[in-house]
Image 1 (spheres, one colour):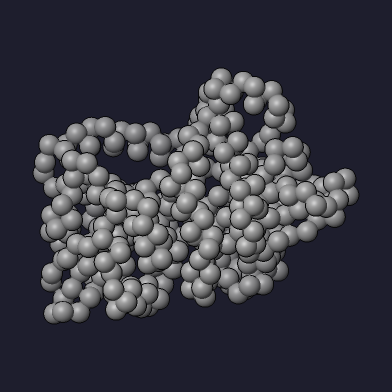
Image 2: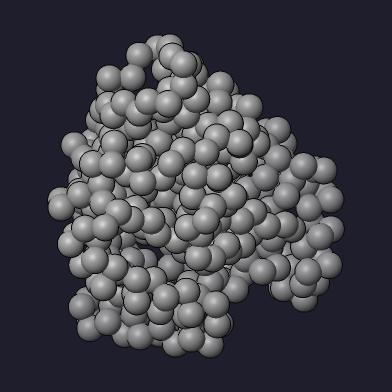
Length: 375
């Protein structure tokens, strides 16, 4: 077995075809963040992106996309932006993980959304956590029946708010797979406002992330595409989402809404309509990603799983990384596992957001509820 490290732009057509072949043959890899198109886009935008090409007897058996940062610190491709990472290979492939890290010239690899059970990393998994999905494999009606079972009261409330939104603000219209760049700008503007309002870092303040979304929005093929959706009340956009899809799976990425309409819970209204259109377009599931939002518990009709863990080679950089990183990961896991702690942390962050942008806070709707709005 040999491992060759290349930049994404150095992958030839044969390597790209092999990547797609391996992904299509392995159902556990049905996630657009594992697609070669995403790796190629990241490679165009960030200098630290690399791909380990794994070969056995001159046959490519796997690909390992990753980021190599200063002091040999390895990170999953896309880091905090993505909800899935791992080896693109046949399910049974096992690579000596320290040989892989040595070839990649990294001393540590910290993961939190790894495809679970991959033989190369399985013994280094510290936790496996659920990622809720909207299972559309039996059609939208079967899915909505499950939602009724999960929480009939919540569904009844949302349907009431949906009718009220249409009655008071104008007839509702849903747009699936919009190609309009200005619609994307509207969505990211809402999302930036939400980041600031809730005390989070505004991801769209980084130009490369804006460019990444533009590139993903332009991708349109049967097996990989960016999907922009928006719900309108009359002519006014009220809630939307931008995500990536494979031939069968849509992954949630950037949902947002206009806080002026927060009392109607437009994010939840949008999510249900998005699921309906996704099913009508032949998609079999919407991956909502792991996390502590309460609405996911009753919108979901199934779970995928992702693994957390860490692998390293002995080195000073790996030791320093462990001291600075591991306790933070444990604290984050504890908080997201307990609804009370999650709500408390959310309130604290929103308090910081109000202190950072008092003028914006005064102009925002006074009763914005992010979990219901689905931002």
